[in-house]
Image (tube, rainbow, N blue to C red):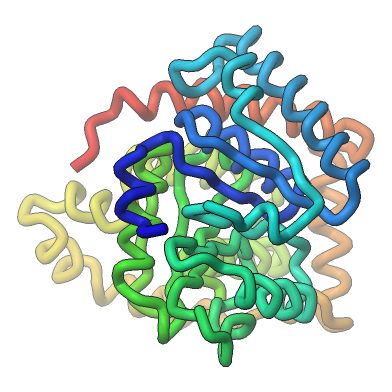
Length: 328
């Protein structure tokens, strides 16, 4: 089957999802909301049955709360989703496979070796991994040119960003087709021109965590106030636009003017950051214990589920508001 014929049939395309956990189910809802036929795969029939029941409940819950995505009812979206515990059946006539198995490299290598033997000419395989560069599990495979990473942020249903990361042998057509598919879901894909450890999101996120760790560990600021710097300060800006556009707006002559004015200060401050902390090492155990103590004072462990639910509820509202903000 030619992939162009599949695309011409638009939302009658079949999407396969490998893995019925939290991320796999989230992808299933996103694709169904856009009208695609979705088949969810897992090893055991019981896993698939449980996932389908949870999907039905979640879609009904979203509809009741008025936050269901797409133009179809919850019932109509659920009717688009089926299950399978046969990999060969999953791949039949599929245009796109979204892999969502646990973050274990050997598990992924074994899975991709199986997929390599079963893929049809039109099928692309995208991994949801946040950890592994695509070359680590696709090297040596016959159909590796159709494999890449499509990494969502959690929860994907309310955070639209998807990082597309090619391996050195991934074709431009594969990247562009995946990008176009993500756009039809209402997601916001960003394309890395080459693979790099941590991709873009985690590299930026980890830079923040490293400096927050150093500030708290050095007694400069409390956990609560460090988080407030983001939630009540930088995060309000960055929820609307990124760091470079923010800089562009913060100087009369735009970003060129900004870095000419403040580049020296940025360099001086950056030089004072100190080494990357070994967060799992013995030398940082006291800092870790102190961060954990303060975090648990703010949000006790037994209230984590409630706090997550509150976060997700406000992410829904923020996501709706964000859709009204004009993007360039």
